[in-house]
Amino acid sequence: MDDKAANGPLDWLTARPIAHRGLHDLNQACWENTATAFSRAVAGNFSIECDVMLAGDGVPVVFHDHELKRLTGTKGLVSDTASGDLTQLTIGKTADTIPLLSDMLALVDGRVPLIIELKGKKGHDDGLVEAVAAALGAYHGKAAIMSFDHHLVRKFPAEAPGIPAGLTAEGHDDAAMEAHFSMLAHGISFVSYEVAAIPNRFTAFMQQQMRCPLISWTVRDKPSAALTWSHGGQITFEGFNPDDE
Image 1 (cartoon, rainbow, N blue to C red):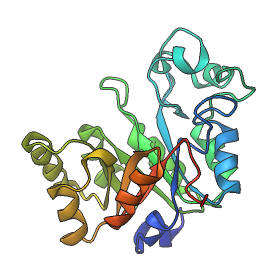
Image 2: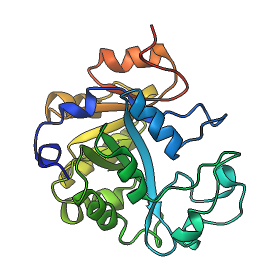
Image 3: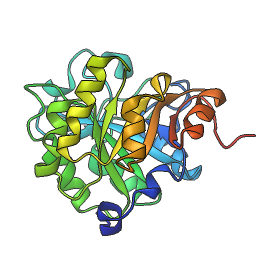
């Protein structure tokens, strides 16, 4: 991975809008987390957010759901299926298949930044952080990792050293705030927050006291984009083009 991406300032994280699961069209003709969606994001010069989990043989694949049905029409779980079999499954009614993380990295090839969300499943995600870190260790481009799953975030410092790491988060009640603040002990360097809950005291602390970048999810219209931008953050978007006037 590019040393400047790992150890330097994270200005690149908020420099451009981030295409949520690639630049798809809400799964009409171009589906989420596919090579086509990633290629479209690169063509638009958008950063890319994607989801990664472990296949049944421990290989990281780019896929959002633990179950296969919604995206492939096939019954079963990603965690019960070998990566070679997953890459034979087509997404929706397209010709795209489930990508390996290694294939997605080869496709993007450092042309735009990547923000990889690690999707945990207790009992089935041992080695996920290490596998993603290993893939990024050979990647020449700007990339960051993040997760909702606190048990994975706790592993980031030891298993993914030097890779910018963030917390994906939501909510604004006291329980949510307490849980989020507890993650500061684990070296997070940015936060990806639910747009409907911005601003809050955690995002304010991260930006003002920790000087950490803020990105928001998932922004589906210009007013929500404007809200994020007004608080100095960057959007993770889908369903519209933020570059359109």
